Image (cartoon, rainbow over all chains, first blue to last red):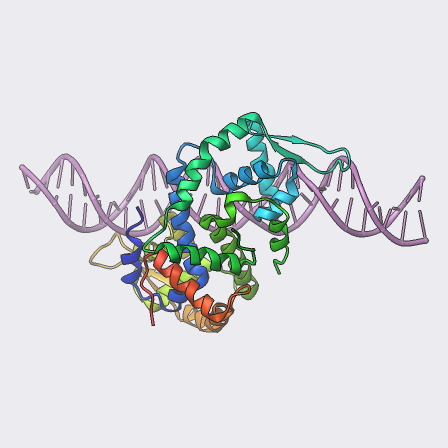
Amino acid sequence: MNEGLAEAVRAVEIGPLRQSLGFLLRLAQIERFERFYAAFEGAGLTPGAFTALIVISGNPGIRQGHLGRSLQIKPANLTKMIRNFEDRGLVSRSIPDDDRRAVELVLSEAGRRFLAKHLPDFKKHESEIPGRLTQGEHRELIRLLCKMVDMEETK
Amino acid sequence: MNEGLAEAVRAVEIGPLRQSLGFLLRLAQIERFERFYAAFEGAGLTPGAFTALIVISGNPGIRQGHLGRSLQIKPANLTKMIRNFEDRGLVSRSIPDDDRRAVELVLSEAGRRFLAKHLPDFKKHESEIPGRLTQGEHRELIRLLCKMVDMEETK
DNA sequence: CCGATATAGTTTACGAGTAAACAAATATGC
DNA sequence: GCATATTTGTTTACTCGTAAACTATATCGG
């Protein structure tokens, strides 16, 4: 797919970038996003939107702000995203009586079907080991990223 | 700085995301970009622009397309970026005689000064080990990312 | 109570990144 | 040679993500 990167980089003197975590993360993420879009062509959602659906699914009634903080999605962006979900009938919003500023989110029946349909693809996508990594290195990479972002790793 | 993420995530059931490479890369990159902007406040450039300057510096006369491919910057975006460099007097463009479609890039004297001024900050920024990683883990993370994107690692 | 402050989410205006159409120069094949 | 295709970079129109201002509700201190 993206098999020009390696040579393109090799042909150039990139100096201190070669060991730059930020630069490498950017390249890695570009690669991963491309694969995501290839795997979910036609599903009509971005990686961020997919993660949001997963979290709503696992936390019915979650508040919008809480969802945003856990996924690092900014409020303004989340408003658009949730409206898109509503327009497509995947998510419904409701205002709780104990705090009428807040918005609580649940998957609709269609939303549950949608997610059930695409979750296997997601798991398959995630199980694909990128680049020349071994399976052990793949696991170690995930462990290190978890630790880097200060997130517990998990069984 | 961003010390709400860990709890925000812990408070939520994120299911299969916990081991999702794409999700973790996104979180890690957000964290890294925030630090970059904190370190280079006032320099007036994005991480991508900074990497471009570094590569132009290390490869005087590099062609625009070549630069873009090595950094995974799309042509349209690169046009804007280089114009911005020109407007600020950091980079000059020239059309080579042997291929008058192409554009070759060199740092101006001001560009060299600009980079010389900010490169120490960049190196300091890169030497900061993120999160709770040990130094060895940091190096291993870089190694694994290099391998993931199929880039040689380096002495 | 009630004014000041904080919080939840939305709107608005803008910047960064992209794809697609485009223009110019070069390479190719008959 | 000359039509055709390819390559290089630019322009245009669009989407995505953001900060800042805003609305509505809730809390706090007197």
